[in-house]
Image: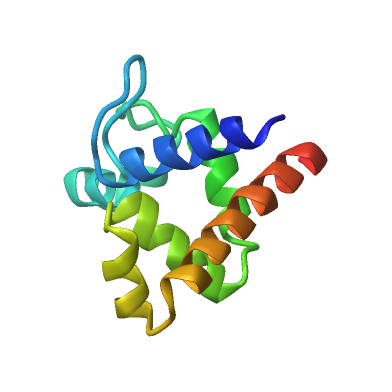
Length: 116
């Protein structure tokens, strides 16, 4: 897998997390399903919307293993769609450190997919 593919996966994950629908994929996130369907949202016999796309599922599994500072940067960039300067200020780091964390996250996902 290439670094560009890892970046695209993170972009699709962020878009899905924001609730934007992707072509051929469900735009409904987990929280919406739980609110809409109630306690039975996780039950297998309930007819529901399609679940999380496979790409989003892989990125989500990767994010669960990321170090917290790296994960915060990923959330600011891909879910929040925030400019680098603004996100770095929120995280109380320099723009270089913020961009370094984003680059590390992309490589982290690339390594994760190779092992996954």
